Length: 202
Image (tube, rainbow, N blue to C red; front, side, top):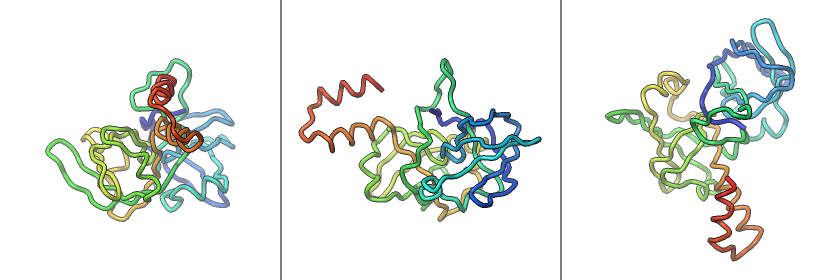
Protein backbone atom coordinates (compact mmCIF):
# COMPACT_ATOMS: atom_id res chain seq x y z
CA UNK A 1 0.00 0.00 0.00
CA UNK A 2 1.01 3.58 -0.68
CA UNK A 3 -0.48 6.97 0.14
CA UNK A 4 0.40 9.04 -2.90
CA UNK A 5 3.06 11.30 -1.39
CA UNK A 6 6.23 11.29 -3.47
CA UNK A 7 9.28 10.39 -1.40
CA UNK A 8 11.84 11.36 -4.01
CA UNK A 9 12.37 12.16 -7.67
CA UNK A 10 14.75 9.47 -8.89
CA UNK A 11 17.01 9.63 -11.92
CA UNK A 12 16.61 6.94 -14.58
CA UNK A 13 19.96 5.33 -15.40
CA UNK A 14 18.50 2.97 -17.99
CA UNK A 15 15.40 1.02 -18.96
CA UNK A 16 16.30 -2.09 -20.92
CA UNK A 17 14.97 -5.67 -21.19
CA UNK A 18 12.16 -4.83 -18.75
CA UNK A 19 14.66 -3.70 -16.09
CA UNK A 20 14.50 -0.13 -14.81
CA UNK A 21 17.64 1.09 -13.05
CA UNK A 22 17.28 4.15 -10.82
CA UNK A 23 19.70 6.48 -9.09
CA UNK A 24 18.17 7.51 -5.76
CA UNK A 25 19.03 8.49 -2.20
CA UNK A 26 16.40 6.11 -0.82
CA UNK A 27 17.89 2.74 0.14
CA UNK A 28 15.37 -0.11 -0.10
CA UNK A 29 15.86 -3.77 0.73
CA UNK A 30 15.86 -6.52 -1.86
CA UNK A 31 12.27 -7.47 -2.65
CA UNK A 32 10.76 -4.23 -1.36
CA UNK A 33 7.80 -2.71 -3.17
CA UNK A 34 8.38 0.73 -4.68
CA UNK A 35 5.81 2.81 -6.55
CA UNK A 36 7.42 4.25 -9.69
CA UNK A 37 5.18 6.86 -11.31
CA UNK A 38 2.42 5.16 -9.34
CA UNK A 39 3.09 1.57 -10.44
CA UNK A 40 4.04 -0.94 -7.73
CA UNK A 41 7.31 -2.64 -8.72
CA UNK A 42 9.67 -4.98 -6.86
CA UNK A 43 13.31 -4.22 -6.12
CA UNK A 44 15.48 -6.94 -7.69
CA UNK A 45 18.95 -5.45 -7.22
CA UNK A 46 20.66 -2.95 -4.93
CA UNK A 47 23.34 -0.76 -6.51
CA UNK A 48 25.92 1.60 -5.04
CA UNK A 49 23.81 4.67 -5.80
CA UNK A 50 20.34 3.25 -6.28
CA UNK A 51 18.43 0.12 -7.20
CA UNK A 52 16.81 -1.85 -10.05
CA UNK A 53 13.16 -2.84 -10.42
CA UNK A 54 11.61 -5.24 -12.91
CA UNK A 55 8.47 -4.67 -14.96
CA UNK A 56 6.26 -7.68 -15.59
CA UNK A 57 4.29 -8.06 -18.83
CA UNK A 58 1.18 -6.98 -16.91
CA UNK A 59 2.88 -3.79 -15.73
CA UNK A 60 4.26 -2.96 -19.17
CA UNK A 61 0.78 -3.37 -20.64
CA UNK A 62 -0.89 -0.93 -18.26
CA UNK A 63 1.59 1.90 -17.72
CA UNK A 64 3.13 4.64 -19.85
CA UNK A 65 6.56 3.08 -20.32
CA UNK A 66 7.65 5.93 -22.60
CA UNK A 67 7.88 8.09 -19.46
CA UNK A 68 10.49 5.83 -17.83
CA UNK A 69 13.30 8.16 -18.79
CA UNK A 70 15.15 11.11 -17.29
CA UNK A 71 13.32 11.28 -13.93
CA UNK A 72 10.45 9.47 -12.18
CA UNK A 73 8.39 9.74 -8.99
CA UNK A 74 9.14 7.10 -6.35
CA UNK A 75 7.40 6.20 -3.10
CA UNK A 76 8.26 3.25 -0.81
CA UNK A 77 5.43 1.10 0.51
CA UNK A 78 3.75 2.14 3.74
CA UNK A 79 4.78 0.50 6.99
CA UNK A 80 2.31 -0.39 9.72
CA UNK A 81 1.70 2.71 11.81
CA UNK A 82 2.74 5.19 9.12
CA UNK A 83 0.72 8.36 8.82
CA UNK A 84 -1.52 8.55 5.74
CA UNK A 85 -1.59 12.08 4.34
CA UNK A 86 -2.94 11.29 0.87
CA UNK A 87 -5.24 8.30 0.32
CA UNK A 88 -4.68 4.55 0.24
CA UNK A 89 -3.29 3.40 -3.10
CA UNK A 90 -2.28 -0.08 -4.25
CA UNK A 91 0.08 0.86 -7.05
CA UNK A 92 -2.18 -0.95 -9.53
CA UNK A 93 -2.64 1.28 -12.55
CA UNK A 94 -6.24 1.05 -13.84
CA UNK A 95 -5.95 3.10 -16.98
CA UNK A 96 -3.93 5.59 -18.95
CA UNK A 97 -5.07 9.18 -19.14
CA UNK A 98 -3.94 11.96 -21.46
CA UNK A 99 -3.09 15.50 -20.42
CA UNK A 100 -5.32 17.69 -22.59
CA UNK A 101 -4.98 21.12 -21.03
CA UNK A 102 -2.96 22.99 -18.39
CA UNK A 103 -4.55 26.07 -16.87
CA UNK A 104 -3.21 28.35 -14.15
CA UNK A 105 -5.59 29.10 -11.31
CA UNK A 106 -5.25 31.86 -8.72
CA UNK A 107 -3.77 29.42 -6.20
CA UNK A 108 -2.77 26.40 -8.25
CA UNK A 109 -2.56 24.72 -11.63
CA UNK A 110 -5.42 22.78 -13.20
CA UNK A 111 -4.72 19.63 -15.20
CA UNK A 112 -7.51 18.52 -17.54
CA UNK A 113 -7.04 14.79 -18.13
CA UNK A 114 -9.02 12.68 -20.59
CA UNK A 115 -9.80 9.11 -19.55
CA UNK A 116 -11.11 5.94 -21.22
CA UNK A 117 -14.90 5.79 -21.07
CA UNK A 118 -14.85 2.57 -19.04
CA UNK A 119 -12.86 4.33 -16.32
CA UNK A 120 -15.23 7.26 -15.87
CA UNK A 121 -17.53 5.29 -13.54
CA UNK A 122 -14.77 5.34 -10.90
CA UNK A 123 -14.52 9.15 -10.89
CA UNK A 124 -16.48 11.32 -8.44
CA UNK A 125 -16.42 15.01 -7.61
CA UNK A 126 -14.14 15.56 -4.59
CA UNK A 127 -13.09 11.93 -4.77
CA UNK A 128 -9.47 10.78 -4.82
CA UNK A 129 -7.33 9.70 -7.75
CA UNK A 130 -3.69 8.72 -8.24
CA UNK A 131 -1.93 10.65 -11.03
CA UNK A 132 1.53 9.21 -11.79
CA UNK A 133 1.69 8.17 -8.14
CA UNK A 134 0.51 11.48 -6.64
CA UNK A 135 -2.67 11.53 -4.56
CA UNK A 136 -4.95 14.29 -5.86
CA UNK A 137 -8.55 15.40 -5.39
CA UNK A 138 -10.90 15.36 -8.37
CA UNK A 139 -12.27 18.90 -8.52
CA UNK A 140 -14.55 18.26 -11.47
CA UNK A 141 -15.79 15.26 -13.40
CA UNK A 142 -16.08 16.15 -17.07
CA UNK A 143 -17.82 14.34 -19.92
CA UNK A 144 -14.66 12.52 -21.01
CA UNK A 145 -12.24 13.07 -18.16
CA UNK A 146 -11.45 14.95 -14.97
CA UNK A 147 -10.02 18.23 -13.72
CA UNK A 148 -7.55 18.16 -10.85
CA UNK A 149 -5.98 21.17 -9.15
CA UNK A 150 -2.35 21.00 -8.08
CA UNK A 151 -1.23 23.34 -5.31
CA UNK A 152 2.03 25.28 -5.86
CA UNK A 153 4.00 23.18 -3.34
CA UNK A 154 3.06 19.89 -5.03
CA UNK A 155 3.73 21.43 -8.44
CA UNK A 156 7.25 22.44 -7.37
CA UNK A 157 8.12 19.20 -5.57
CA UNK A 158 6.99 16.80 -8.32
CA UNK A 159 7.61 16.31 -12.02
CA UNK A 160 4.28 17.98 -12.82
CA UNK A 161 6.14 21.19 -13.62
CA UNK A 162 7.70 19.46 -16.65
CA UNK A 163 4.49 17.93 -18.05
CA UNK A 164 3.42 18.84 -21.58
CA UNK A 165 0.10 18.59 -23.39
CA UNK A 166 -0.38 15.12 -24.84
CA UNK A 167 1.56 13.26 -22.16
CA UNK A 168 0.14 9.88 -21.21
CA UNK A 169 -0.44 9.53 -17.48
CA UNK A 170 -0.70 6.53 -15.16
CA UNK A 171 -4.07 6.70 -13.40
CA UNK A 172 -5.17 4.70 -10.35
CA UNK A 173 -8.82 5.07 -9.40
CA UNK A 174 -9.98 5.09 -5.80
CA UNK A 175 -9.84 1.69 -4.11
CA UNK A 176 -13.31 1.99 -2.58
CA UNK A 177 -14.95 2.84 -5.92
CA UNK A 178 -13.43 -0.27 -7.52
CA UNK A 179 -14.65 -2.58 -4.76
CA UNK A 180 -18.16 -1.16 -4.83
CA UNK A 181 -18.29 -1.49 -8.61
CA UNK A 182 -17.09 -5.09 -8.41
CA UNK A 183 -19.71 -5.83 -5.77
CA UNK A 184 -22.46 -4.38 -7.95
CA UNK A 185 -21.26 -6.51 -10.88
CA UNK A 186 -21.14 -9.65 -8.75
CA UNK A 187 -24.41 -9.11 -6.92
CA UNK A 188 -27.03 -7.27 -8.94
CA UNK A 189 -29.49 -5.34 -6.83
CA UNK A 190 -27.05 -4.62 -3.98
CA UNK A 191 -28.58 -2.44 -1.27
CA UNK A 192 -27.23 0.87 -0.01
CA UNK A 193 -26.90 -0.80 3.42
CA UNK A 194 -24.39 -3.16 1.81
CA UNK A 195 -22.54 -0.21 0.26
CA UNK A 196 -22.41 1.47 3.67
CA UNK A 197 -21.07 -1.73 5.24
CA UNK A 198 -18.31 -1.94 2.63
CA UNK A 199 -17.38 1.71 3.18
CA UNK A 200 -16.86 1.06 6.90
CA UNK A 201 -14.28 -1.59 5.98
CA UNK A 202 -12.28 0.90 3.89
